[in-house]
Amino acid sequence: MNFCVLTLFPELFDTFFAHGMIKRALDKGLIQGTGINIRDFTHDRHHTVDDKPYGGGCGMVMKPEPLDEALQAAKKQCPESRIILMSPQGQPFDQQKAIELSSREQGLVFICGRYEGIDERIYNLWVDEEISIGDYVMTGGELAAMVIIDAVARLIPGVLGKEESAQADSFIDERLEHAQYTRPETFKGQHVPEILLSGNHEKIRQWREDSALKRTFIKRPDLFEKMKPTAVEKQMLKQWCTELSRLAEQ
Ligand code: 4FN
Image 1 (tube, rainbow, N blue to C red):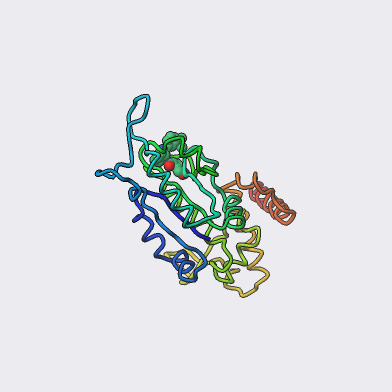
Image 2: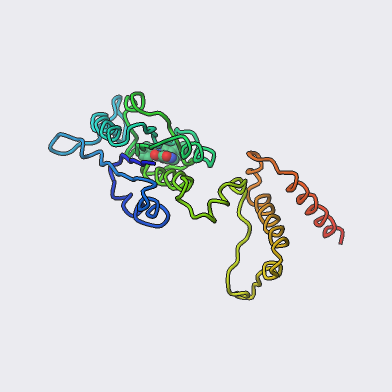
């Protein structure tokens, strides 16, 4: 998949593309990443990319002409790709969307805004989809684009190792992870749960399932709205209920 980012700060993506899983995916040729500097598509002496808003008011708006030319260049570089505007007005991004983008699209072109945003006509002419990563004020869309690229790239076949991808296939995506421990066995007075040292794989599997369910239930009960508890999980929740009421009776 080709990720093409239109931005005033392409350098922001240099380190992002140069490390970890994303770098490995690039090296393997599984993804391509390109930063396109919108300023390269200006023709005036000052390389102007912004202008005052019609109707007055504070702040500046990104001029349409450089963006339009940058988009033409991006379309040439990555034909058949979906054009995504990163914007607080977009649909909220989630794992479902990440799966959809990674499975359906050959390439993604991201428009990252700065200042007060882009001229509406660019939106009308070019944008296939508007996505938001959450409800907070940011200074630009670049970090948001990185969030999407990170979440989408890891779903592309071959990007994750075999072991990790088996996990990605299961329903685990809708639940929090179970608690994790590594050596040493005792750290600042806290011990690793006995079961994890037992070598009993079935018991360990059960403990992990239970841990994941409890965490999801306590820390992010809203996650059950998207995916209702399975029969096994319902059983575990009931078991937990029984244990808790026994504790309460004591
Ligand atoms: N943000 C809000 C309301 C009004 C403005 C903003 C805001 C960057 C160009 C957009 C923000 C958040 C999630 C892109 C926010 C995102 C952006 C994103 C973003 C500069 C104009 C701006 C009500 C959401 C708090 C600045 C709410 N996901 N404007 O942040 O690009 O992708």
